[in-house]
Length: 138
Image (cartoon, rainbow, N blue to C red; front, side, top):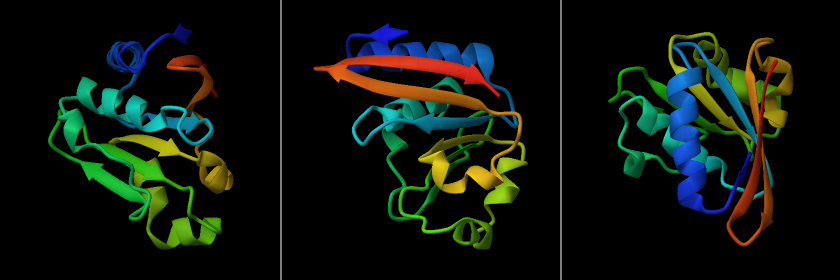
């Protein structure tokens, strides 16, 4: 999928989430800094009734919980993690195998902890506001 604006990417993500995600889904978002991972999480959250204005990158707290929608959405930013041990210490596994929808930025930092069944979204910045979005189920 190629999108030509932030709005187009967000609309796509919201519609995709409504059609494809259920309680317990784990979505891994891969892409460089500024690729649009947090915008995708905003749209996934909106699809389940969370105000997207509440959603921001949990860079300094690791996990933000959004419980105001139909299904809880858990937004992880693993960029600052130094080891999977750090993730285990804060209870990441409880989220990954729980009833909410987990959206994980920088999932490669906790690769060993990720469930076998998950969705991978890769976002590539193509210049200006264009993005290539690839989705695959594992």
